[in-house]
Picture 1 (cartoon, rainbow, N blue to C red):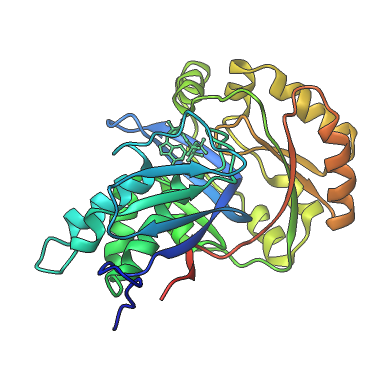
Picture 2 (cartoon, rainbow, N blue to C red):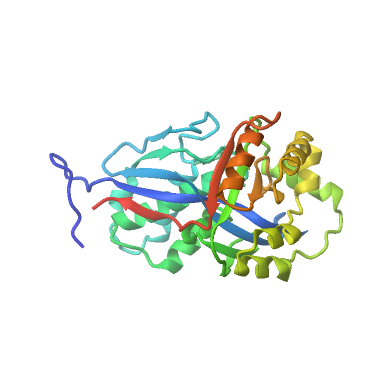
Length: 316
Ligand code: ATP
């Protein structure tokens, strides 16, 4: 593969990558293992609400965060999940491949996913960074990318693939799920973050002996049939009670969405964002207008799923 160079520069041209956010259409939470992580049985759906990263070779390892959700909580150092993903890939490829180009990348993140909202924004950045880095060095084996993704974060492997999938383990053991048509979501964000660890700690207090994590067959049948009403009857998130206990206004927003006609209020991951399932695009628009005026809702964002996984949108 030939890599085009910037005019007046010896560095390869920048690459731009998009990666989706996600909702957990179903989240079954089981027992915690010795490592403290709970056994999950989840159905991920990738959303057409995502992040765009630009990886610029020949830089100074800077991280610039811009866009709708540029936030002081997003780190600009090695702990940023995008940087962490590239550094983990470099370490995994220490087999003689030329990875020099990846060592001094500047990374620009166009943040369109709320931070710490349970929609996997940081994981999307990691997935995008992996795809961009792989592109810059002429491709990386899928199995290696998967391994690196899992090392960086539990949701990163799914966001590489996109679509709809069941995730077991910490969410990294993936199998694709058949879906028909488009599902319409209104994502109601909160102005306040809710740390994932707080929700799991409360879950442990509420459920000292949790039942095994499962995905009901009816959820898969509804997805395959493309029937949002049937999906609403069976999808659930086991973390809901714990999240409400940590942040009571979540229950108020859920009730407001149901009163406004949503088919299903669904905590996204560990929250505090709540995904409301709509019948169709018109219904989603009506819901978004009503939710936007609801106390406790920062923004009501319309989106659809499933969306594709992380992919290059521009670069030579
Ligand atoms: P998940 O649903 O995967 O648990 P989330 O959507 O709730 O994640 P993120 O937006 O991914 O939450 O961020 C959680 C924390 O991760 C942030 O508070 C921040 O400190 C840290 N972080 C590291 N890298 C990033 C990044 N690129 N974008 C956002 N947060 C990041």
